[in-house]
Image (spheres, rainbow, N blue to C red):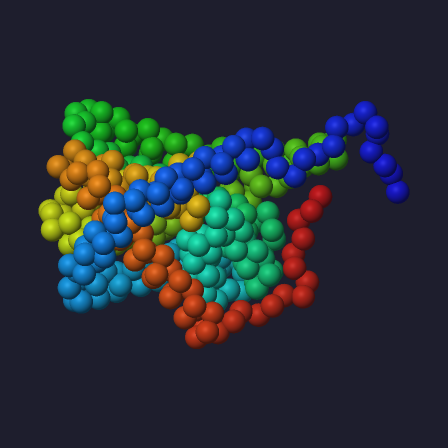
Length: 323
């Protein structure tokens, strides 16, 4: 057994930047909680939730159910030709992953997706991580492209330039992944892992046109449902609700977020609704009400999936991709 050299610096489990980002996340969440408690803002949130008619709530729940089915369809379509996956198993993974992301702090719930994909269907860990990476990249690009349509006071040429830049990046990433070099014995361990991840990303992006259609369909329904709910909570127009829906989703792309999204989620929604005449306090209350609805749907969906959907086969010999 080898021992580290006395002069070799010990590896710290977390870097300073990680701790700083977590501190900022806690500050965002604490700030929201202080605001929420101070001035009895919980009464305003409760009053706004009470304004939603049962049929409006039913439409929003049905729309969210459709987004879950579309997201599962997108993942199933990626793996159905190369792996023995079942749609029910992928749907279960999708719902459990969604619940984990919504409730676990610091995006730690993201680990559920590659972990379950590898454990249930024998997908190589690097391939599973690449699939999640490409999934999130597509989510970010679609949201960013749609944001150009609702961002206030932007000239047409700048909106077109915005969409063009997103489209160029969406084309460049698969092209970069496909041109990956071969793994050589002379490569270091980190370089080998990077090349393997790049090759796995190339495999994920192979059917990118279909995955783009799945992603656009998913986000179209999701944003429409959130805009519908926000407009109902605020008694405002659908355009105002769409601005708020884009705001909360753009906040989810930020590298630093509140614990379980609390704080940054509400701030993003309130910020984009402000140019539509919605006061900051009203926007925060409405976004918090939407956030509670989203988390409730995620928890119920994840719970029902764990209880009702059939489990996938557990692989005893998971595919290894370690160098």
